[in-house]
Length: 571
Image 1: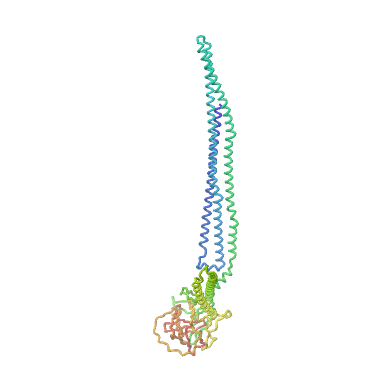
Image 2: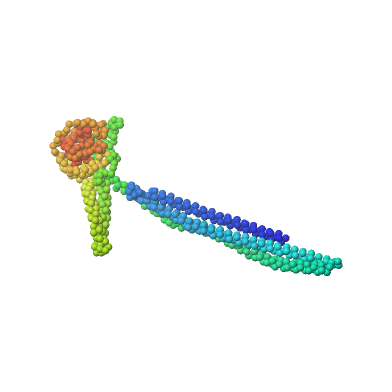
């Protein structure tokens, strides 16, 4: 019965150890799983932050590009501010990933090593204690069996002695021998009894210590280890939330910055920027003249007006063209000349002013360098051991040359700017002067925008060498006979009646006439005038029956016939 009870206890204890071993192993696996979860979350945060940064970088305005010029608009600046705040927002997600790695993943990885070592030590102590109690029990059983065997041997020896002593036929020597054998067996049984008693007492003490001290202590250590593991998981979960909570204030500031950027958009200011950017400085065209077809000499309205007076006239299919320049796009695209003469007056003035400001900054930079080198040279003169004063002279000479070159450039642009400002119409002029307000043979000042080449398709080329005055009463040279029959201008005149000649003109300067509706002329060439300047700076001329077009009025000297009513010359 005792043996069965002891076997049940050992089996129960062993089962408990197995259960605890499985449970603690599952707890360790759970810690590993949670560590893997946090690690994947950290990788997601890192990847998200990288994608957000790349997105912000992708849409940032590039240097020396059109996007950089667009930053003068409030909505473009707001977008740039949003991109910057988004970049900071991505940085907070990187902070989350770093904190998750340092505060949770690294800590749990180190703790996993510790808990595995501790668990292994506790179960090793438990198995060792179990093996010890089982070994003691086996030794106790061995003592018990020896005591039992010695007792049986002593009883048999005693019975044999009593039998020999009762037998009268047995010699006295045999009886004495049997008596000594019985005494020896009794002594052995007594010794075995004493050994068994002593070891039994020892085993009971060990067993009591095993079940009431050693095993409970091991179980308590395992319980403490499990509680620490659970507590550590709880702390990590709290840290998991705190890591996000710590960056919320900065994330909120980023979002506030985006909101502030959106609120800084000013539609009216942006629209004014567009007006300032594209303001040409030209005045609207004058009123369209009334054409009296009752007179013998017929006139047609200039094509430079915004409305076409010949719209009512039927035109052959495929040749109808409505000219609304300067709203037609310029066909001659390119960087333009250095003086920006291809631009309208207002735009040219802004470009020249910007160039002057840029040169002024470069001059100031060179002067600062010159001052710094001059001070260095003075120090070298006062302290020769610090350096050779003459070593600075080549650089000073180079800077002086650079300053002279920049100042020369700035003077050139300032001259162009003064010329533009002089030629621009004043803001008080609200109407174009009437064609008929001036008389023939009047010398006209060249302070307006008519000596600028502003062609029907919207391009503008200023002629710097244009004359400021011309005479309208110089005798014309003989007109050359027409020799060319190949038309060099657009078909816009094909559907019109042939206009009568109202005078002649002489080309003062060569004119290429690349633009639509214009005609090229050579310097000194004589042409017929078929339509005078209507106040827009263009005169319509004819070379022969098939060649006619517009030339800048400032490029020709016009001689109107005496019966040309109300004629005038614009220079």
